[in-house]
Amino acid sequence: MKKIPVGSIIYFVAALLWLFLAFTDFGNWSTRVYFALFLLFVVVGIINWRMTDRSNSD
Image (cartoon, rainbow, N blue to C red):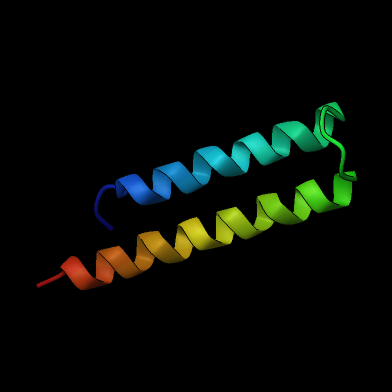
């Protein structure tokens, strides 16, 4: 696997922000919603990373 693309890094940073909101009770939604968004962004970031890695391989 090559280095992480910028898009995946953005997804991972956004996922960490959702996790931060889940544990600090800062937002208006419930913890389950924030945790589901965290998992969604992590999965999308991993898929983006793997698909970018696959498309760039020669």
